[in-house]
Length: 240
Image (cartoon, rainbow, N blue to C red; front, side, top):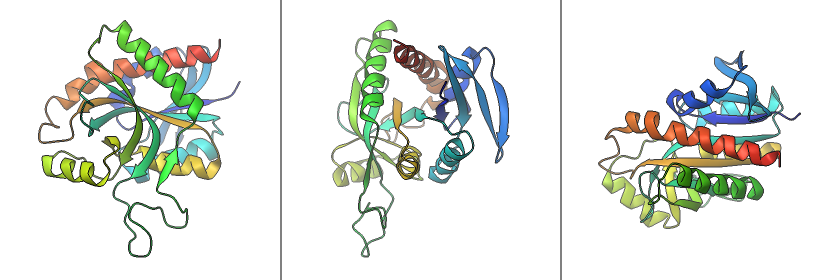
């Protein structure tokens, strides 16, 4: 049985998942607790990456080198950027980019030096099935107004919470759907190791001047429940 990794940046985003695992046991590596157990008939490892790109890259590297996981799903919350990406919607990334990567004039803005690219693609099959699972979960929860979006998610070591910064990101990256702080780092590490991955995020705010309003409550009451339901449905689909 292959080991599947589920990663989140905040404990509140993973709380419901950990409570649903009947036999989880902690394995300590680099100051992190990797919870190994079973969920929906699969052997999984759930881990809190902590916040930011370096923390995410460290966690992904440990998952791939120490636990030899077969695939990784990063889940949690994000700020909506594009028009129509609203609080309560779900975004499944097709590509990821570091919006704060800038080695110009040596390299084009956003391009990762020596990679010849600024975007890293998620695994198409994983993203497709996670999007299907997300739509089903929204329907199950009666969230008839919420939508599932697919496309570009951007990452950076800054919590975007001001209208001016939101507008600047939208102007520079008009196809970006949402912004968070870890996904693109995970994407680069998985690219290096050649391991499939996906990123699915619940939109918790509009990444503007209202981004701090009831964020913690939203994560605990909405996003963590969505995470558990989406991941469980996706894992179940892998068995059919």
